[in-house]
Length: 113
Image (cartoon, rainbow, N blue to C red; front, side, top):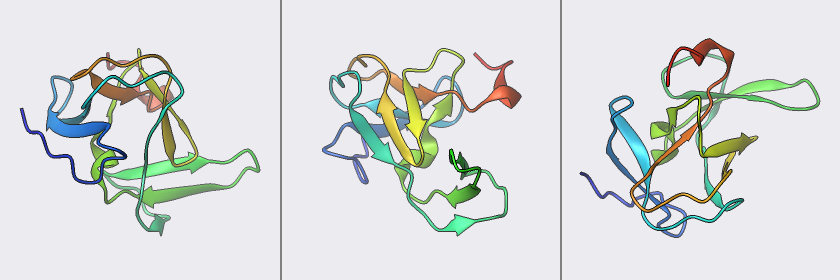
């Protein structure tokens, strides 16, 4: 298991090998519900791609963030332990140390656990 802590917010997470897909984000320590885990950082884009996070604002504006920090390794789950608010990821429940941090990518990913 890799223990890269670069880009971590207060070392909350690290990048490691995922059982879901390739690499993933894992809790470096206990994370309490509602804690800010991290922010997807990178240039704004209108081109889709493997590490593009699509943000849908309440105003109706939609834009992509070509994520260039470790947050790009957050995998999908239909039973996530985190959710997004814009470009920020928050814990939706307590997350145990070394548990993979996941969020729901949306309707196109319903067949993935």
